[in-house]
Length: 112
Image (cartoon, rainbow, N blue to C red):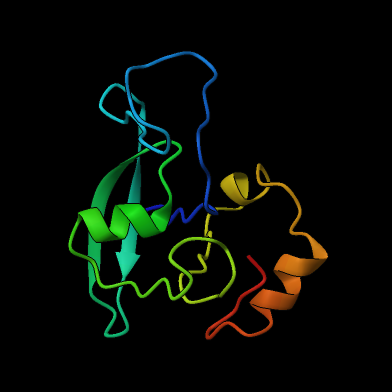
């Protein structure tokens, strides 16, 4: 069974000293989820993504072409995601009015 799970951009922040510079995240020990990227031709690529990593970062680290015109600052809709599993979708926070306005500009928008 293939679940397509495309979470919104998330960042992990920590107040303890991990020995990393600001902005660096340690995904080596994190739990992962399976994510299927579907390109414009319908070709699917299944990858494992650490929980907390943005889909833009995951795509770029796995040689998946994803523009991210705003470089992941959530100021555009080029890397919006579609969650096809209702159980996962219902776990997400409701989009803000600003997010809904941005999504109105997205290609291929769905209810989820």
